Image 1 (cartoon, rainbow over the protein chains, first blue to last red):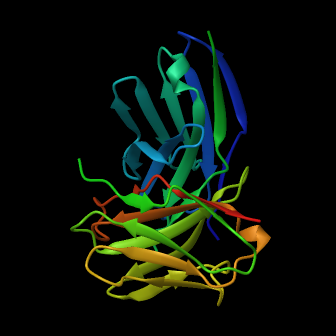
Image 2 (cartoon, rainbow over the protein chains, first blue to last red; image 1 turned 135 degrees about the vertical axis):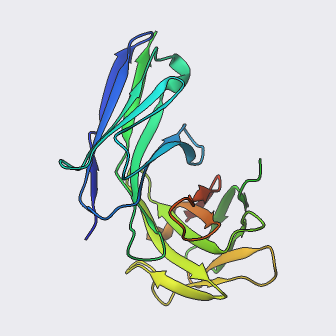
Length: 112
Length: 115
């Protein structure tokens, strides 16, 4: 079945770039997502990329997709303390009613 | 911008009690979902719902769970007899359709605590 893997923790200094990585298994995914979850809060859709794209840029966020290696990354430029949160990589399973499969989440800690 | 809403934000219940978690999906959306996140674990798919019936469900969604769209706006998840292990954050989501350009929107979640 489909699975999404990501590292658990990342620590960066304020102003540096953060890169959060993810691998997935479902080669027929149509969408890959990045969600942000702040403590005690819900899931905020940050950005997404179609599976036929290699890159998507949205202000400070850059998503890179390597479909051959099934690798997705999220780069946050000029990381701020407000970026501290858990970041979930997720994919849509294209064979059904679009249920979303999530990774376990990477906790980003931004050090002032 | 339209958003998915959920009530209550936090529900505390005794083991064995029934709970109903409520969601109001985005008004023109057709597909509805429930997910749950046990503390420290992945967000897991529970069930999808379309055209007034369950379209897909996971192994977690056993006979203790049911979903309903009682009117044109609400979408509910009922847990018949809660267990301690049902304590989790429950997220509702909705999709406008299944086209490749459609994306899923999540509500803020209901934190369920079973004592």
